[in-house]
Length: 347
Image 1 (cartoon, rainbow, N blue to C red):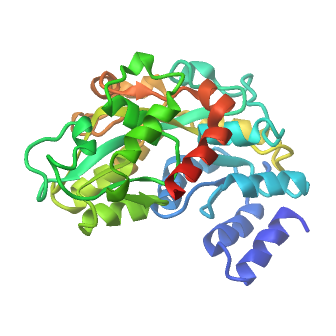
Image 2 (tube, rainbow, N blue to C red):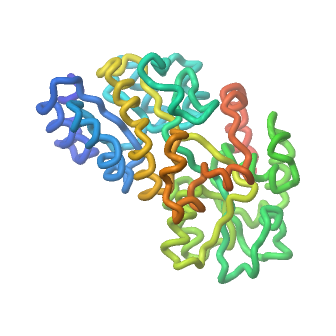
């Protein structure tokens, strides 16, 4: 079965109907190869359609947004089965760590993709930054008086109540170490055991989230009084609750969202032309306006409206108070550390 047939079959079975129907229409529409970009669904489907697909298609391209979620295991299965249906995946540094050593990703073609349109240090061999987000601390101001510090996250006597963290070592270890007094410039290599011990100190008060929507509901519904979560979700909570849920970039962790291309993707090099199109700074500012993801193109900095700068994780004032994720450390250590984290919280 070719890609179009697979997506049509998925539609018939009720799987990813939006992606399948859009793909079927797109396959009939353009001379260029169809480029399927897969993201994590929800409002990101419509936002990516307007920000990236529509401008690319207006220039003669044929991009389709699939919101079914580019899980690392699914990318690997497609590659190993030689049955790849995706061309561009909305991924992160752990995707490089998990799939790079297994040969499941195409090197980014920087003869097509422009490195000068990426913040320095965020154009990797197997992935290129498309936006920024942060992992930050948020709190329920109805239950927490004043402005807590990240260190207060671990002080349940001063601020009683449950805390939440992601059920994943990425960023959670860094936030624990930053809260424990480690300077951003001294963060890597991570002192994993020190971070584990920090979480052990409040283990009985910890809740774990596995999705962005779950992190929102745990804070919004009062299940916890503080949490470590993505800045995009914290920003949504701030708006949803009329400012009841507050957050800070102080001692947060700035992270890149990456475009990655599965090995043997059907559209071939057209995927890189699509990525190059998505480096347009105006389009990236639109994503910030809609979702809170910071632009990766340095040229976008002066285009960000004043009212959005405080919510932009990559703005100079916010970068100043954060650490930046070290991709090299993750590529070397993520798989082992992630499993050790899961084992530790299961005790």
